[in-house]
Length: 211
Ligand code: NHR
Ligand code: GAR
Image (cartoon, rainbow, N blue to C red):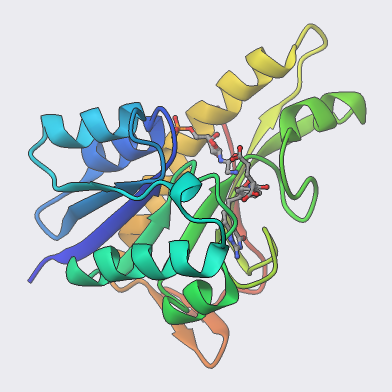
């Protein structure tokens, strides 16, 4: 039985692509859901024969019915893990609780720094020498769930938000498939909120530096 992954994305889907490229016989992306009908992530999925669905948030004046509609589609795919990959809509507590312990996000900062949007610009403005990305479990607190892994990149003197974002993207494409494979190969356990990786409690996020 292969490990079933559903990906939610709003944009280009380069993280989706990295996940697809990393799939092994035990890891299968069984559906891709977007809130944007023209998002390139949908084209990437269709190229590989993966089912897609679109639920446009703009058709829902409230967040709860939008999230309920997404849940219906996602549940039909019977996911073991739901992966946010550049998904740009904040999720309701009902949605987050429904997928508790099997919902993860990649956020383009070294959490707890720079929750929310425009993280690269904020890291530059703060004069940080290091920046990066974090993979975390999603709970009802925005970008506040337990961090599983981080990849650090250097900030260079000549960086713009765009050049820094490109470097962080490279890190994302390495770290996200790696963390997903921890789940798929049962290396990661969640016991009453305690995170256990390879049999050891994970007291701090796994941290790696982009070479
Ligand atoms: N939902 C919950 N409950 N918890 C998290 O940690 C979430 C989440 C939904 C998405 C991704 C997150 C990120 O990595 C994510 C984490 C969107 C916004 C946002 O402000 C903030 C953080 C994240 C994603 N979205 C606006 C909104 O009103 C819309 C912005 C837009 O459409 O461009 O939903 O950064
Ligand atoms: C990634 O950098 C991801 O960390 C970020 O969006 C980008 C998506 O790129 N996520 C957020 O900002 C969530 N609010 P992609 O579509 O090429 O994977």
